[in-house]
Amino acid sequence: MNVPVIIAAVCAVLAVMIVRKLRHGGSCCGEHESAAAKVRAADRDLSHYPYRYRAVIEGMVCGNCVRNAENAFNSAEGICAAVELGSKTADIRSKRRLNRREAAAMLDGTSYTLTEFEEVK
Image (cartoon, rainbow, N blue to C red; front, side, top):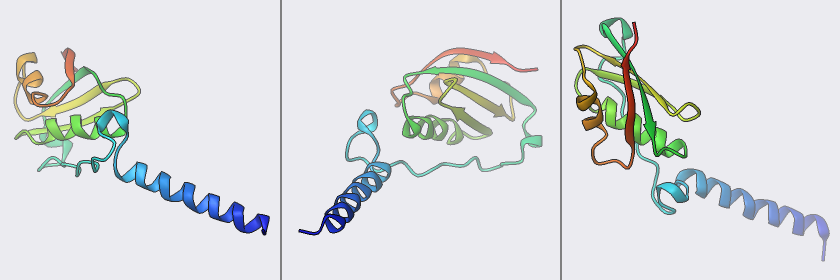
């Protein structure tokens, strides 16, 4: 058998497996779940958001977790948020004042917990 053909076949199989993994999430978010569609804030002009908050979120372990948490915030009216996995933080912009309870409620229905919440001046 031809060695280059075997190597090419193995590489093709690995490439297919990697693409499927990227499209269908990892083990923490469901092995066969598709990644959630990104929810963008209705108004993406940050100058329209006079209030800014920093939140620490526990329970995120992958990129799909970040997208799910961002979607939870960005689905709320008057909110524009960006979540970062490395620091497990969310930069939340709001058109009105928020309190910790309201921000935590935005994560209801997810497996993530808001552990810290502070206004950024």
